[in-house]
Each structure stands twice: as structure tokens, then as C-alpha cells.
Image: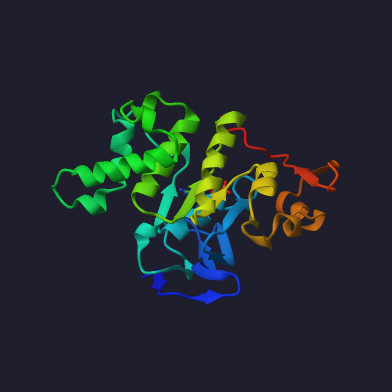
Amino acid sequence: MSLQFWTTDVNDNGEKIIEVHDLSAGYGGDPAVVNARFEIYAGDRIAIIGPNGAGKSTLIKTIVGILQPQSGHVRIAGGNPQRIGYLPQHQRVNWDFPVTVRDVVMMGRARHIGWMRWPGREQYRAVDAALERVDLLAVADRQVGELSGGQQRRVFIARALAQEADILLLDEPFSGVDSTAQANVMDVLEALNADGITIVLCTHDLNLAFSRFKRVIALRGQIIACGTPQEVYTPAVLSKVYGGRLATWDDGRQVMMFVDDHAHHDDV
Ligand code: ADP
């Protein structure tokens, strides 16, 4: 059993809810992620950055339990896997499936409904409350395939909330959405984070990770750095992660920026 659980563990950073310990993970051959070690605390808002193929997706899938560690372990506090809500990459979802927004979010209630039962009024109330939190109640009866990309991301966030997840792991949620939709989804995530929900998100958008996250994990097969954006965004770390061209600008805070020469071409 690779996913392990413990009760509560509180230190100076708060309540530790996920522990990744000497984790190596991948797809049978050489591990895509090697010896990763970090902790996540309740209320964290963490971005995992790194170039294409750095292992971001692999790391998230292993935390969620879709992939088994090759060595090391992931531990989740509280003994309840339902507390984790996972948003897969957008292109991995079949958006043509004829199902309404409310139906998708109701899937998050499966555990509460029980086997071969129909959802009752209480379940519909929970689903509507989740839709309200992501500002989608008005489109609850629409087919999910008809929504915009940003709205579809929010449907999946609502499904995780309906599941009563308090830790959200999102795999590249912003690939293929425009900047307005990205800002809307990010606003929803920040509001949820302010309510105590822990957010872990992987992205190749260095600006976003710098400006809207409390902590950043820089990954390239192994963890190169983990800390506040200011701690992680140094020339030494970024050149190790991207090995690419350095562009700098000064917006008053001496922000540096690496241009990833291998920027995602497959995201749109
Ligand atoms: P990222 O999310 O940072 O782009 P991934 O975790 O998707 O990186 O990929 C890490 C490495 O694992 C890459 O070398 C990739 O080719 C490989 N990989 C990803 N998915 C699979 C898979 N299903 N089977 C085999 N190798 C894979």
C-alpha cells in the first residue's frame, strides 16, 4: 500500500496534510520523477513549475494515487482519500459526452448517494452550493460540452467541492484558455484558498506561478527548489530548470524571467 494516511501532525507551518517522501515515480522504465521530497500544509497555494516533460503531471498523478510510487511514499493526513479533488488535464476529458453541468458535479456526490440509489434533495442542495461557489449555478442545466473552456474548468472544481475535497490538485488547468478565463478561474481558486482549501497546481506559466502562489516547486525530473516565489526565482534555479534563454525585466521589484525555449506548442 503506497498511499498512507496519518491522523494529525501540526508544526510551525500549520497542519501537515501531504507528505511526499523520497518519491520516485514513472511508467515502468527509468522514473520520470526522482527522489522528490516535500510537505504540503493546510491552506497552502503551491504551483509546480518546470518545462515540458519535467514530471509535473507524473508527480500530481502519484500524489492523487493514479500512479504507484516506484519507491518512497506519499502520505495524506486524515485517512480520507476523498479529501483530494483531482482535475485532470483538459484534453484527457471527453467533453462531447452528453451530460449536464449539474450531472458532472453530482458525480462528486457518488459516495454520499450510495450504490443504486437516486440522489435526494440534500444531494441536489450540495451540488447547487458547489456550483454557486464557482459562479456556475446559472448554467447548471446546460450540456457541459457547450460551456467555454474556463467554465469547464470551474465545473470540475465544483465537482471536487461537491465531493467535499479540501485539497485540490490541478494538472495544467490553464492550457488552452484565454487570459480572461484564466483570471476568472484563478480568482475562484484564490477565494477557495482563502476559505481554507489547499491548492496544488502545475503550470508552465512562470508569471502566474510567481504572482499568484504562496509557494513554488521547481521541477525537472527532481525537485530543484521549493520555497516562496522569491526564493525559487533565482538565476541559478531557473537555469537549472529550464536551461534556456534568460530574459530580464524590471518592474520595480527586480523580477527575472526565463524564456523556456521549449515552450508548449501542444497546449492550444
Ligand atoms: P510534465 O507534466 O512536466 O510535462 P510528465 O509528467 O507528463 O511531464 O512527463 C514526464 C516524463 O514521463 C516524460 O519524459 C514523458 O515522456 C514521460 N511520460 C509521461 N506520461 C507517460 C506515459 N503514460 N507512459 C510513458 N511515459 C510517460
